[in-house]
Amino acid sequence: MNHVGTKEERKRVLGKVYLVGAGPGDPGLMTLKGKGLLECADVVVYDALVSPQILAMINPAADKIDAGKRMGRHSLLQEETTQLLIEKAQTEAIVVRLKGGDPFVFGRGGEEMEDLVGAGVSVEVVPGVTSGIAAPAYAGIPLTHRSYSSSVTFVTGHESAGKYRPAVNWSAIAHGSETIVIYMGVHNLPYIVEQLHLAGLSLETPVALVRWGTRPEQEELIGTLATIVDKIEKAKFLAPAIAVIGNVVNLHSILSGCRP
Image (cartoon, rainbow, N blue to C red; front, top):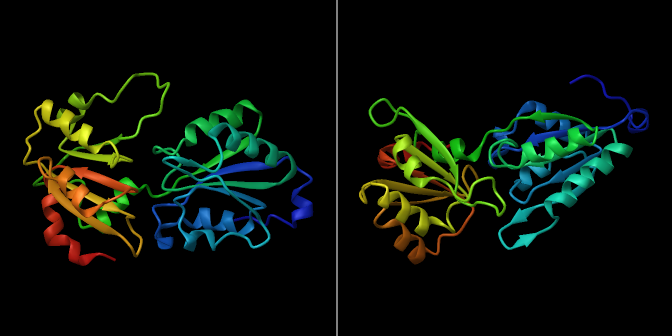
């Protein structure tokens, strides 16, 4: 990264917002570019799922603001977060919006960037490793495999109100690829399982849930479309978790012992 000068020198120019993907949790998966920005940031506005180890990379002198969102609990509303970024860019040179995973994969990064550009703020995206790829990998579940799957669909299981369409087309999802990866789907999984079965997916289809993927506390729950909902209730398995549906889940029993 180029020399950025002192904080006083950098304040003479209009600030820039960096939408930085923090990755899924393991600090070793944070990109070098993202780490460099954290180390010289003036302000970091971070999400709830960013791991403590990555937060520890932040410049000690930076203004650190928690904008985390979890179901039923909001630190800042989305509109407030965007407005905060716009305001900080007027007084600070390097403003980092630190988001779990990748900003553009179910991270609202596109919405925030659109608003920032509309407000005339300079903005740059720094991609991160998304949990939909990393969590299954750490659980020994390859999303593609020549013997099991040549296609993958990534879909959100938690839809916001006021969307451009009323719901995910689960019938199309069921037949669209051999592996389905669902973000934020634990809460709605009973409905999702029902819809996939109604669309023709066999109840024997393997399902894996990976909670806190890539972190030391990572845990998995393995079942099928027929059993996974009951297993969630019995295990009191809670979010945040990634769901993987498809025959690649069968590789978990063979490959999970090689976890990093």
